[in-house]
Length: 271
Ligand SMILES: [Zn+2]
Image (tube, rainbow, N blue to C red; front, side):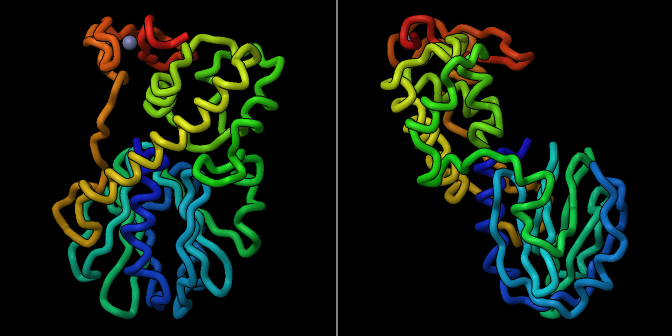
């Protein structure tokens, strides 16, 4: 599933190709994604320019003169820049064609993705307005994590995966961040110390930055046509390493289920 680093890598991959480019046609081949793709998009967007390509949590925001397209990749979505005359495949449900002969094509086999429209401030859209801070921005701090966690009886792992607390900490990144910070995933959020919130906020930033950096270096070309989306394998310390030796202390990594999600940690290094 595309997580925040993949979405950010996608944003960086497509931005130089579509920013300041004029839309010639919007093509909806299959409108039934997670929510129906609005049928009015072509009428609205024909001959309009993409002004900016930004991201909020896992939503890509394509701003135009008349409003903003909000794109979510769901479970299996990917975006690529292709020649418009290249034949669309079975799962290529949506595309924006540009007057330079290229298009931005959305492929989404499982159709949990979304293409939405707003003429207003996209950050006020009902899907975005309640989101917590971006993990890589200054607004996400140890102080905030400490304040929000007081009296919370949920596990720290579920707490940092809550998008109202901070966005973009998916299941893999939660296990990895807790390992790096030396915090036990089952510890109650309300019980973590000030020092642990410092270590954890720093670890979340470090892990996500490293993933984005790796995305930039190992990524498939966004304008290539080999059919593979630009997602990448992370270097993982604990996730999916059940019974393998801890990279710090060599004790076997333990796997448990927490909030119905697989969770990996070291019984010795994480308190
Ligand atoms: Zn260990």
